[in-house]
Image 1 (tube, rainbow, N blue to C red):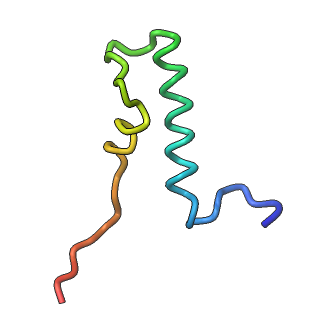
Image 2: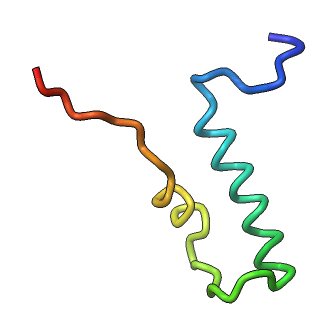
Length: 58
């Protein structure tokens, strides 16, 4: 839809991981972190993302 500020909820995680990847690449390129760059940066970022899956109790 035209004029949206935020992506649709169906794409929010995809967009968020791409933003995080771009930010991480800049941080590593500029030496802004003491952490060694993971071999699989995208996989590392995805592994750190919050997963809003809740256990059903009923």
